[in-house]
Image (cartoon, rainbow, N blue to C red):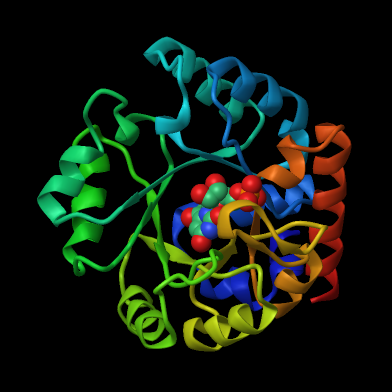
Length: 263
Ligand code: 6AU
């Protein structure tokens, strides 16, 4: 089933976290990762509970949460796992390898609950080993998404930088793939040309209402992003700011799935 819908991506992308994602997406018929940019543990838990069937991944910013407790977080993560949802902490690591490894621990102990984290390659390749060692320190594994493009207006991830990130990241074990600019299908297309079939492209900047968002965010249409080569669509406001988050999540799932079938 997953093999049929994902086509060459399934045979070329072999890391276990991408495979888990593609399997889940195929079973639940959704390419949606929910960006839970919410301020309380309860708000995250309740939203995940209600939209869990329509998402394949949950993206968290643990440092946004105001009433964080270790037990509350364990409950959120347990719930996500029960609902077959991968857990991604979008911490956007960017430090040297040693410090990145340490930052996987600390008070919130990302290495113990996140399956996926995000990293900039700006500090050089050792950040990847640092993060993988962070998981190894607690006997776990995880996947890394490297920022190759961004969705925000005026960002400095220019084509030459994107190319360098992809050239290095393509060859690295533990790197699931790249963050691309979902607000612009041409950017996604050119990123796919650089990446080839062997790694994932996950895209933020996705909304059914395209155009400018708050504070320089830019939005493109989910269908266009998938047709241009995106494998997972990161949707935050489009769901949690909607009057009916459940219906919104269903609709994003439907649009993303139909686009994959058409691709
Ligand atoms: O749908 P939104 O605009 O409400 O939320 C978009 C989410 C946020 C950002 O932290 C994240 O996507 N994001 C990222 C990621 C995923 O790394 C990169 C980027 O370039 N733009 C972006 O918005 O949680």
